[in-house]
Length: 410
Image 1: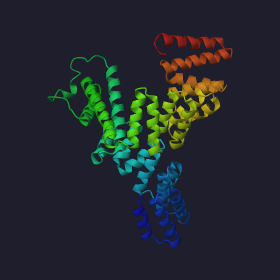
Image 2: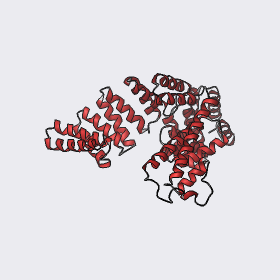
Image 3: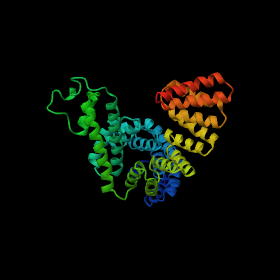
Image 4: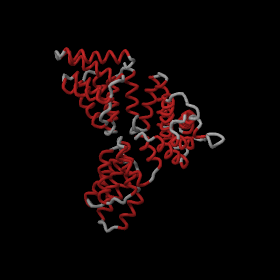
């Protein structure tokens, strides 16, 4: 919702001088960066015109600019309830929901406006890597040096590269004639990333295509991140990229410093508080890590990863009951996730809630009964039953744990 659109709306409507006065004051405050004052003025406009979709949309946009995402979502949603045809508002609400970690609900709004940049981020968050790469590549064609687009394109291609590499590792040695299937009618396989992606969609188990695509995607990811460092050296994204590289190489102090600088430049960047918390946790600074995870949950209240990390950090500090609350929220946001159920069981057991611990671990084993996570659940159940004096059940779970351990499952 642009200021120009907002101004035009008032010229075309029959409004009182008081409404115009507050609207103009709000726009002037927003223009000068005094967003708190702008919000107060726009709120007065909505009070005077409660049925005006545009007024609620302008207030929602101001909330968004001020980092008040829950309030922004509420106002933008109300605006669309009053007038579903406001495409700018669909885009704004989609962006707010994305920032909150709710890509699933953001996607229908973003698909209405066909914004490739935001669509690419939504597809990435939902694990639809092919669609994410295509959309972000289209967005970069128009804004080739945009550090945000480059960052998400780098993430999408890095994830796609790893996924293809993992799939290739699982395939049996290539039977005769299988490996060149996609290129059998051509002199050579496609070379560029998007053509390789299209070819792989038609021949998902072609070993040559998987290898070529994995390499091309990895190179595209490296190039995108390098371009951020070269063309936007002092940006928040540049510091984030450096932090990620330091963390991967085990240089935790440098990673912490770069994440702090990234957040100083852009405090509301999704996933950066989470990443900084992970660095602090690796350094054993659990209280500081929990604080960062807590900020991430406030910024992204639909992020299961944020609540999981916060719960784990609280448990590490011996705050079992608080940990249960956060891990239960993670479970609600991403149900049937083995790692979340394992940690929820641990927290419940530490909080002396044996029933909840047992239920969490049994549910986990109904989903996954042969991984390292499953082995930990068997071990937890064994200890739980032994404490309860149920020796037979404890021995049964211990036997299952030892079997998995001997098979390399733990």
